[in-house]
Image (tube, rainbow, N blue to C red; front, side, top):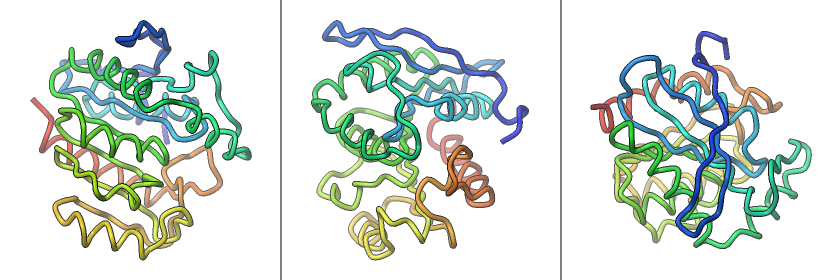
Length: 229
């Protein structure tokens, strides 16, 4: 990912949820008038620098992006190393659904100043994006390898949705991905040959540049169709 792609650079902002909880968030805004807003939900590692770069990439595409630090309810600035995913799994498991939704709503309210708002999630953040898209009035959903989506198919997104999976994803095997396709045919689903879980994250060994770039091209075009004002 080049500096040109991620410009403008992300910064940290403060949010306050409806229950009074104060949390931080990565934020990035485009140089000109935003096409809309995007709420970004992080993977099990927390609000890493990579998530800030995701916000910057959305901003480079014309969207005002904000990524709440959902683990702030457990302690300030909790970020887990990439070789300790189980620590992040435990952090997500320690959060009540009501608290997560409150933080997502706070981020959506901030992003909504830019216009219509989409939700975007990665890994377990993708699973919560799926839940939120079934519950809240988002304009669209962009979901990168949502790890629990195959187990959440009784929930239906209330908005246009695009999903991205690698065909070597050990958390969402091919059979599970095909089940999504069969049970939720309205969802736009892309499978990337040779890519594994977390193929979008340049900071992880599983990064696949070709798959990541194509997924981003498709995602930006998707929001341009469904969100851009």
